[in-house]
Length: 348
Image (cartoon, rainbow, N blue to C red; front, side, top):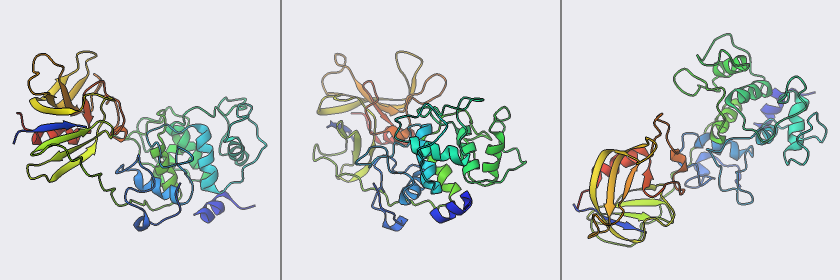
């Protein structure tokens, strides 16, 4: 009977504001922006494209499958199907788990159980799989170590996993170059695993070369206003910075509130490096406030700013979530874009 390694080898001025499924491919053949619409310029994009090119992943929004949902946590059931495709395993209808009946991933889950890659989620019985539960980074280490038969390592790679039952698997993956942790000599074994990180684990385990697509060209800016201006499209959740010669300076996705503010011409009236929400100790950086001319003092003002942070320092959203409606009224930007807009925008 062929080993899993054999199977793997085979698979192988005044600022005015205007408010308004993939086929295998080599990196050079990928269209601008790549296969998916929601992972552009992410550090994991190359591995996402690499595993998509060999049909290990097919997106997250069938039948279109033009999105990958990179920040969404991977469920244990989804993980099973990823491994079955990556390892070239044969799905089977027979298995030990009683909680997967009717699950679209059931046969793939059974295949993982048959090979010993998964042992269930309720020891010592292990007759449940917990298909809808998010995979943790520690569990992923175990799945990869078993599935790809990664040699063990005696080197203690991370400082935060000494109490984890998966420490041996984590060390094995670190020694093999499959993981470099989550920063600051840590692995974050208990953290749920986003789909983007899954792509890196699987891509490295398969020895794939990241496939970074050419950058997607930005959409043309709407023909509104003149002179130096910021154009904000609420429907597209995008801003364009236009200079006094009508040349595009920059464009990028943001996160605002649906329908807020209303269409119209606004002026920048105030800026501050630091800003605070009126509740919860939430802070923002590089606030650029704007309002309709003639309404100072009697109308609610809006602002562009960085991603807000809780008192703990945790951001309220990720940069990958830009382009979606997530704000209560102002317009959130990636931190480096917020700083750049703050420096570029003039009051007046």
